[in-house]
Length: 551
Image (cartoon, rainbow, N blue to C red; front, side):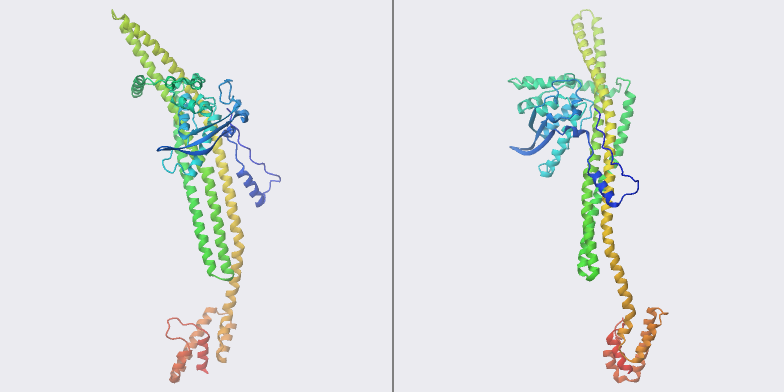
């Protein structure tokens, strides 16, 4: 099945000059909000909805309604059916609606592994022990279960599976019987046998699902384990290719784990940045309310801008979680599904090797019985056992070859589709980052004029107050006033040097006057320069007291 190609990017409009910021913003927004087509979108006629919680004694579970509107099936699904099988799930155009719980989805997942061994089965949402009945978790699981069904429906190896047909259309009784049917791994050769066995159940359901031969199963397990320990597996022409695929998948898994971890850390840091901007804006709002005039207004504006930046950062973090972090985790799950498909091939190879080993043993036993006089009956039994072993070996060989070819097709499809998916994820992430940084830049730019206007006003006020301060404070004697005016007009000296020199002259005159007229010391201490403090400064009262003394 050819996967739908991603939508082409929007063509740039001539002339090829850099567009304005508003044009970039609009293009970025349209591109970012435009969802790329994915293969599972072709199965939109399958929906999972209406989660309902049930209680049966101590057992509590959630059921989901699964609807199939096959009349809306797209041509991409119809083209998959090359066999024109009347039992195909998408040939019936009737509407169906059933109730299924999570364990039913899990049954379908496991049954697909048996019916289509070697296929890359789409991943199911994980189980959760706590808070599994919360509304957020139930909704998240519903979305993922719907995605699972749609992926199975468009899967080129799974879309005609009998288990899928049973899951989507069987009533409660038929589905219950189907879940109890023990299916062999080779059932796929007769794709309609399962549905026929459960479509017409007998009065005794146990007749339709006989217990498996436990003894034979244990013997088979021991035989395969012995063969696996021996390490002498049957060779095939594609063994080297599969070894290369396994190495590629192992390397890819390690690299994707690292990328997924870094993406999760990035989302976490962005949320921390959002919280930090919120606290930052709150602090500036409080500070601005304690100030007055233009300074307070500018600080409050700074706080509001930081709060808006916090909201944008949180929205971006949530968007990255959904559109970047979650797809990477889903990619890791798909890689794990590829490893499971390779493991199924290894199991088939092990089974085939075990069958060949048993055939060789049975041939040796037959030859021994034929060479023993009076063992004709045992020889006949050994011959029948050998024929059954050869039939099982032929079936195992065909199954091994079928699974091997299926794995090769699936790996090729995995590389093609997941390559396109990774490209879409990265492009969406880059586009979202461009739009996010553009919004941040716009908010900072809008704040800048407020701060620049504040700095100009503060500088002008500071210069004016520094120049006029000495003339305003000197209201005393004419000699001191003329001296201060002369020093102010002499702009060649630094202003701070002028202040220091003037204060020294005042102190010297004050001490001389105090020594010549000790009776006026109390008056001087009350209105003159404050000598008791460690910090001396000039104010109106100090100049007034000094003027009285000098006069």
